[in-house]
Amino acid sequence: MSYFAAATLRGSAGWTAAEVNLNGVIDVEEVADRLRDVDLDADVSLLFVESDDTYLVVMRLDEGEDLRIFGSDSAFADESRLGAVLVGDIKAPAIEIDEVVERSADADPDKPAADPDADPVGDADLLADLGVSARRLLELCGHEGLMPADVTAELCQTIGCGDEVEELREA
Image 1 (tube, helix red, strand yellow):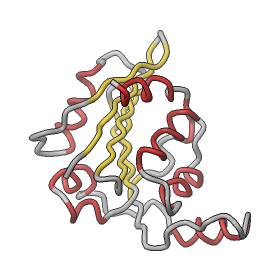
Image 2 (spheres, one colour):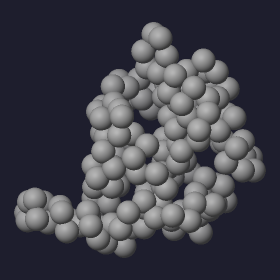
Image 3 (cartoon, rainbow, N blue to C red):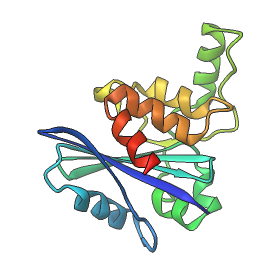
Image 4 (tube, one colour):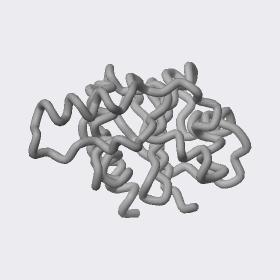
């Protein structure tokens, strides 16, 4: 299973980005340690993990503490060892995707609806203070036809680190 893992960190000088190697990680705490190692002094550390053009996981640390995780689909835990490490221990659904499907259809009937088979898990509010509401995050992750890379790009553009992640992806 192939993946791309981009850490975005906000410090006193603004946003920076770095690729993170997750090969051989054994648990989510080791993943959090690798995120901390990118910049111990970051105010906000985010890790966007895209896997096989299907799954997206977003992790967040505030000042190196209080790990919060969101996964676009709980099936990722069953599909790969990395998925099991990242979202395998998350039992709580983010919210019912049906609520987002209904709201999306009500808002614009011509717009493609969210994928009703998606089962997002974790803390969908983890980017709310950065300008991405839980509802918007769920809409993006559940939108049929959007790849995890597209979702990451949209999220990063919204929170202000889009150029940094784009440069990292092109490197």
